Image 1: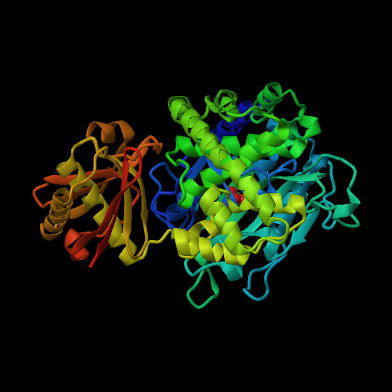
Image 2: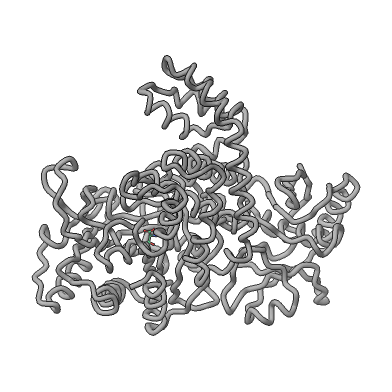
Length: 604
Ligand code: SER
């Protein structure tokens, strides 16, 4: 069965169960300062899991593009990838454990034909300290579901209970790491048993959470009904949610009985192309072929969502992916300059579900090519320098010089050091890095940084100011200006927008004055829900690269007479009246890539 068939089956199965299919959000989170990338299907839905009404209803399903930067170094085994597609379904205060476990089990066994004997289950064993009980309810449901298939599912044999480390899910991980306001809950995972022989290097005996490769996690149902409180305790959310996620490639691997996700139909075409170009076989250099395929795919999806190689934040992750891919392309013997040739097989794998890739092909190819060239032009010099240094261990300062002068990302230096049996002072490197590049966030890329998809009053005010700013930029600079990304914290707005020329100081002043004028005019922020076509007809602003559902909510900034200054596709929240904002000030404006500029602004 192909991955595309499995995706379609999943979406239509849950559609039949009353779910609305929602589009995949961009990999770049919107108005969510907590992570650099969308790493699971629930992330764009936080506000709705917390109780806001979703325009598409209380049962949702989709196939979400996801990226986990903290897995970059894990890539090489048979199942870890940085980019993946997560099949997800959600109950927003609607159904709960009974329906979820029943439907997922029937999807796996009846729709996909997986043998129930091959499935193993984990559940939450409880957390006495936080007063959260063992999930006996799920155990009872699973026992019944297996019994219906003639299988006696005993605890300790087929169903295993684990604690916070394994069977509690929140964006921040275990309960003690969660900031106040963050939702989370016990989860129940399903593992597929490939029946391979246990590898004793991973422990005496095998079990679902063993890393030897026999068991593969193929789905996680999170029962998201708790919220961390300011005093550190846990309280029930006002609604009981289900947040399910399962990796499409992993499910495909189970259906086809091959535990290597890289041999699945989505990724293997990239490897096959690399084999053809290099004349080498996958089997001879498995980890490097995997890194090349994974990293090119991750970078391509990122570029399609507007993130291009650079030295800051998200752009630096794309740079790291491509530079590591170049190193491993050399290992597998891919001729120089050939990395971008993997773009077409990639697009062929994904164009059905993510047609954006077709429209962004030129850009993807160009950026991969340019990055390979840039890196190669310094690689040789850098390697010579490295050989000199690596007579001894490498200090953090030296590692930083390799980065700054030769463009060696830390992972490349670490890999080269490992090959030569020398060590690198990572701590000092990171200090230097943060100091010089103002990108300390990158060191923790993808890691949770605390705070909710922040809906505090300060952030909400800046969010409204962001709308006024975009409308003012469009009025002063022209209608070609659109939002290309935005990141709002409690301290500031950072808005990226399309515009080719420099913005003059006079223009900036006019923009600032216009925002302040609109604040004084006491405009109301009014939310209206409507079909997407209607919103498009009204000319409401939508951000490039983001797909919206069939019913959308639009925020209008308008005066009492109904004269509209700004209208944007947006989920909120906003202040009620712009007078709440105080005084608006532009702090900085700069170019960040060709045709895209960045503005930072604050409220005083
Ligand atoms: N959010 C959960 C996960 O990422 C389920 O989707 O595993």
